[in-house]
Image: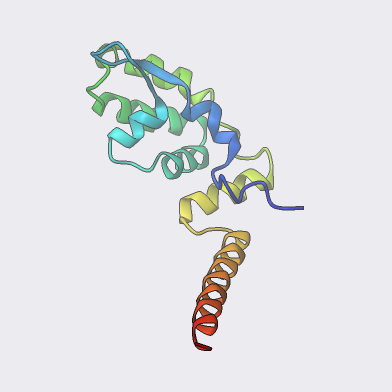
Length: 141
């Protein structure tokens, strides 16, 4: 059976946290945690993996610091502490399973899993095979 993470290598346990709303921007659009982290110039999945590794209280404090820096949502200026507390409750527990810790470390390290390497080698092989076939078919003329 194919690995379900081939097309989406990001841990699904992070989705509830990353797609949670932090509030509305000045134009009235909902802004998610994912968008907030990206707008701050951070990799949302790496940052989430780091938050999971910190534990609930340290993650809440780190998230509060990040949200305080974020100026696109006006309500966060006075309420970033409460929002950070609520959002930190959506983070998965670090001790829930070895799978989550493995996924978090893969995201934090930025290295694809073994299946990603296999797919890369197969893609290169396929491209080389196609090149040989095209060159080979034209040489008989």
